[in-house]
Image (cartoon, rainbow, N blue to C red; front, side, top):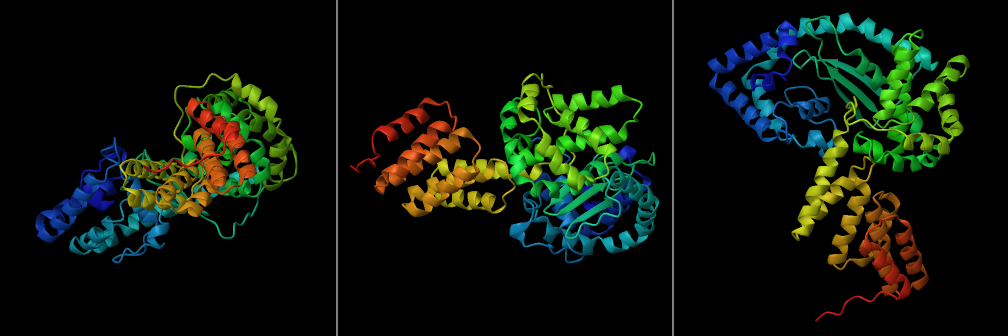
Length: 463
């Protein structure tokens, strides 16, 4: 962050603690006096400019993601194999060698030692308030003295970041919040609570897959909602976000201000988080009962009347836009970008490049529609290369994970054709019927499936 601040990262500078400006001035003085430090800093600045996400000019979120996965200086080794790094962190992995040179040339260790006491004071001053916030949340959820083996929730205070920006991350079972206190002496406690609720509730979703699967039809009713794409494709993400927002309505607004609570719930619903109202009502009963959230979670899913909730969802007039989610879906969106690039390579007949990118997406499966799209693309690549058994396996995988009706339908159509070529007509017919049932309204899809049903597929003869 000291390097990027010296490169022009100045978001929230006026609201930051004095230590941020002090560090910026000290780094500037160092690079003016030391040509090696200047060269090392300038190399980082060039890298930062060249790797800005499209549409941004002052973004450091990728470097926060990378920083969470780096070990101690001066080595800055990655804690995970490079192939397992979050995609946004992997995108800027090339900065590590530049960071190593900058750390040594600019004597950042001495700079850190000078300001370490200020950092420690920040941690000490906020430890008890944050511990109290988490304790209050556990009490509401009826999880006193809760322990979470194999999980980690960590808060980092970094005054060189903008106080207006909170970086929350979820990497497998680890949840991180990186933020900066402002010069007004405040931090964004609501984002800390929100991330902690994900830390507690997300593992519960993993143990209630069948109950969540039952609720998936409501995803059809929120297609026009303004919420981020991952919530429209993953029922677990949607359900837990709705539950969290309902908890926030009941814990952050006094009980005697029901109008404000209901207004918060309604805003959430209008953004597309359509189960918020249900959970808000269910939590009223939860507060009266003795059992904790670990038991109540499954009961609330089981007791939900999906037909009623879908009817209620269809009557919602969705807002023009939604508030950004605290835990950014950047990982998923970056995977979508990789897959878009893979499909472009496929269209230009760069099969090797397309296969490499699609395989990377599939290996870092973050849910949503990307795994299905990736498997479908790999299957088409295998088909073009004559690897038909591999294509069959990939098309089968696509039928299991694709949610886009067209991708799903054509996966079944191609499987039908493969089985026709293998003289397995009964199996081929099953896939053509599944293609028609996938819900793709396109004429070419319906025609291909109906042709497959009427006549066994024969590959075109080569001229």
